[in-house]
Length: 77
Image 1: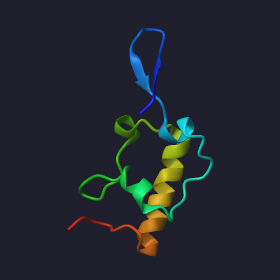
Image 2: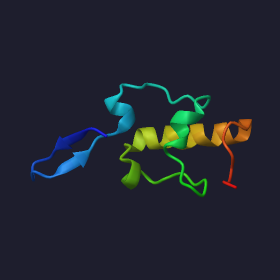
Image 3: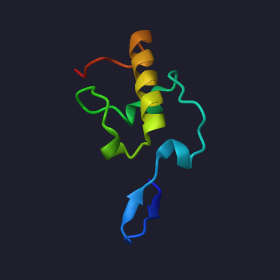
Image 4: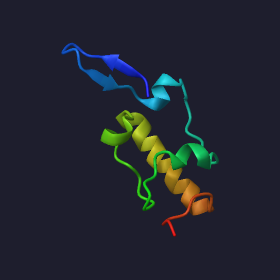
């Protein structure tokens, strides 16, 4: 993850999708989406993944689409 400094000299994580200049989050890319799914198959919250709110909403929608299409499992075995 890329780090930026805020005014208090503590490091703050930057959004992965903003730092990579990704406009769209593709639901057909399960390797990218698996980074943001926990071991139990839950969508990880933005405090742990450091995604901004705009990309977190798009990420959640992409994960749900990938699950519906069968590209990601709903639960882990």
